[in-house]
Length: 239
Length: 171
Image 1 (cartoon, rainbow over the protein chains, first blue to last red):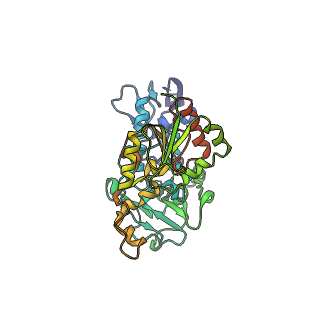
Image 2 (image 1 turned 60 degrees about the horizontal axis):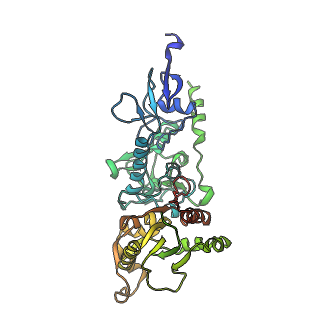
Image 3 (image 1 turned 180 degrees about the vertical axis):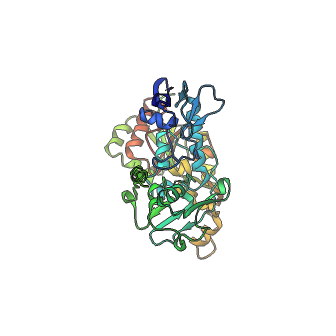
């Protein structure tokens, strides 16, 4: 097949764009500086389509589609912003805030949190859905890191970075729906995990204050997930 | 929206930080105060809530029987109700006790049995203001910055309902 045949042309917000056939709507949009909000997506990790913030309208589709796991197609007409999409995204954010105990003012990630920033960016000033106030544990057994399930949005970035980049597969998910928890090994305390290499990648990719380094506060809680694409590129060169 | 002539502030279950932030407007308070009268507030002496107030800024969550009574009265007698700060908006720190209810909190604070007479009973669940009464303006922040509060007041005094979407964040 000639290289040309792998190119798809489509419109995103009425702008003509072209993309490789194996690219997603999200990738095509970002290459053309069209902003789509995301939370579970992180460059350098596989996509799971879990958070639903990147929902877009595709002409002819009967429902909204997640841009991060929808491949581009020839002639696709994509809309990334409309009153309906904005309403859905705000609702998704409200569900995140209502599901667990996200108390920004006393959170270690205050000021460095992707959930908090998204609320600002998408104009969510309050939550209409009743808060759930679940009783969730905090595991501080690891000498350097803590997991606070109250702040977890179940994006599974930690699970993916641990398996795909570090190769340790320490993190996993247990339970169903809102009762799901990210766990280390077979729900052993993190400090007793025999597979954890204490590399800290999970902490760096966590978008909220769910995973954090001990003895850090304020600006020092800023996370640095930007190393991921480089690691990916380096890996691709390996046999 | 009718002209804003009277302003009130109220303090439910919060730390007073939002009021501190209001005071932090400094000399801008003098500039603004020529345009309205502060008719009821923890900062002034008047004990009863007036018959009608154009704008009321409410700090704090609804946590006790007294808060409930106050906020209903305020809503009834207020034109534009402003939820000021994260406690009013989300419950924030005040609502952290919702995980266990008021019982364990009282036990923790009072070595003796907690006083039950002359003090308002705590509600089983702390609630954001808009879960109890309709709210017109939402101002996030813990506390909202003086700049944010200034913008809100300037907009209201100009006869517009301010929107804080994309301007102020939680925390």
